[in-house]
Image (cartoon, rainbow, N blue to C red; front, side, top):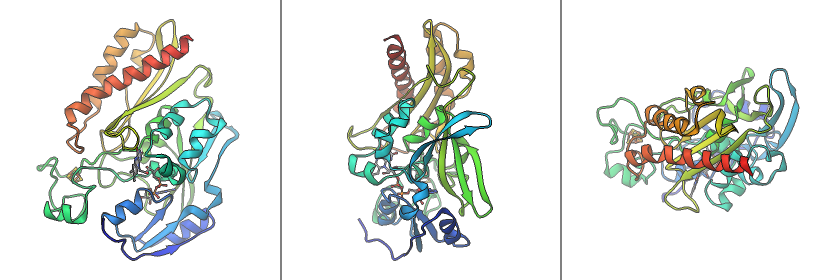
Length: 337
Ligand SMILES: Cc1cc2nc3c(=O)[nH]c(=O)nc-3n(C[C@H](O)[C@H](O)[C@H](O)COP(=O)(O)OP(=O)(O)OC[C@H]3O[C@@H](n4cnc5c(N)ncnc54)[C@H](O)[C@@H]3O)c2cc1C
Ligand code: SF4
């Protein structure tokens, strides 16, 4: 691993100061827990001239039940600076087990102690030709994502297919999370899925001067409320105790009379963005086996892994429906208890 490049460290104590510190500085980056950014800097993947350390911004940390929202009722607000470890232990998350399972599946305990929700959601995309040392990439003529002209995964392509590989986003997406984003012109809200773009290089739709402040999870997800909405997350990875997802699936559902209702499925580790699967309404209220068979087809059609990881894309395409069936089976079994 190479030495870190030189950078200036700024330590704002409020969101407003952090936004002001970032304004007009293209070479600046926000630094949260640093578990991904500092590794990438050591690999020469990014060389920011300025790091804006968010660690001193107290208003970014913590989980709370917000006052009633005009449309959604009560909301769980999770600050972007909240650590992954806190997600795994906070009693306020008892109705959203997918979040706990996803957080527990991220890296190892020491990473979770400092790694944050914001850093996880804004994670750089990953590829076997990109997450390498500078000398490795130079020996392979670099690639389009950084310093090169072509893509080794799809040489005729004019885009990068590096995969979004965070675990939290799909779990938040099936729970209907909304991103709270601060920028020079104030605060705006966006469905979490919309902060991502299907592009391995420009993978976030946030403007460079914007930062993620929090995610808001509606606790009244529809007219019947969260009560009865079961959720879960499962991933496959090379080393069970540590690794990024080769593929991960989050599910939220209600089950009545052995039929699925309110089914939501989201996937990570395959495309350049976490993907909320479309067309699931048609699977609700029909025989479970038929619904699962249709879900297999929807997943195969909508998810498009490329050879961005050491595991063949074909394997990831096949394992996603298996993971989805496993999570659904587990949630239905828990419902029957
Ligand atoms: C060995 C190892 C294993 C790992 N395994 C996993 C894994 O299994 N699953 C997984 O999901 N991740 C994994 N990671 C990646 C990382 O540890 C986690 O994703 C962690 O949550 C990142 O959070 P952080 O606070 O450390 O982010 P940082 O590294 O500080 O930042 C990551 C990116 O987010 C940006 N950012 C941070 N906060 C904000 C904000 N509020 N607004 C806008 N941009 C922001 C930064 O500028 C940077 O680009 C692993 C890392 C390592 C080193
Ligand atoms: S998908 Fe292609 S351009 Fe993107 S990181 Fe991998 S090799 Fe590079």
